[in-house]
Length: 304
Ligand SMILES: C[C@](O)(C(=O)O)[C@H](CC(=O)O)C(=O)O
Image (tube, rainbow, N blue to C red; front, side):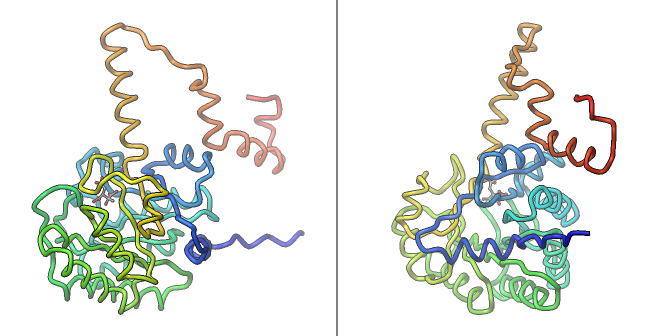
C-alpha cells in the first residue's frame, strides 16, 4: 500500500500566507457548500465563512445573534472539508457564552478544520457590526473570551489563529477600541479586526499601531467602512480582506430577478451554463465519479 500523503493543515498555510511580505489574503465570503465551491473554483488563497450569511442561509434569519455554536460549527466544518489545504476563516461571533463556552467553541472550530476564527466584544444578543446601537461587554469580559481561546488552543491538538474583533469604535471611540485590540494581542490573539473603520486615517493608524500583528479589513458592501480595492487595502496596511457580501449580494439580486421573471412571465430563461450537469461539476461531479470508479464501483462507468 502506498503511503498516504499528509495534507498541509490549513492553519499552517494561513500562517505562511501572513508571513509573506507584500501579500494580502483576499477572502470571499461564503455561507454554504455551493457558494464555497464557486469561490474555490476561482482559485482564491482562502475563504471566509460569514456569520450573517450562515444565519440567513441556514436559519432564514437576520444577523442578530440567532445562530448557535452548533449551527456555526456545522457549517464551518462542511466548508472547511471541501478543501482541507485551503484556509477557512470563520466567524465565531461572541464565542457563544462565558469562558467555558468560548473554550468549547475554540476546540470545536479546531476539530472542524477551521484555520482562523474571530471573537468579538459585543453582548451575546449581538447584531451585525454595521448596524447601529450595538452593545458591548466590558473589556475584562472581552479579554476573558480571548484568553479562553488561547488556553484551549494550547490544550487541543492542532492549530487555529485567533482573531480579536472589537466593535467598540462606534460607542467608545478609536483610542479605546485600539486599546482593546492591543490588550487582546498582548494575551495571545494573532490577528486584529477593528470593526466599522470609518476612514483611511483610522485604517492607517490602526495598522501602524498594531504592527507587526496583521490587521483584517471587513469590506462590507454598503456598510460603515469606505469601499477600498485590494490594492488600496494593502496600501493602508491590511494583511487580510474579507468580503462578507461577496455571494450574498449577487445571489439576492439574481434570485430576486428570477423570481420576478417567473412570477410575471410564467417562464424562466435558464442559461445553458447553469444546467444540472454544469452546476454539479462545480460541486465535484467529475471527482466523485473518478473516486467511485477507482474503488471498483460501476454506477457511472457509462457516463452520467
Ligand atoms: C463580518 C460579519 O460578522 C459576518 O457575519 O460576515 C458581519 C458582516 C455583515 O453583516 O455584513 C459584520 O458584523 O460585519
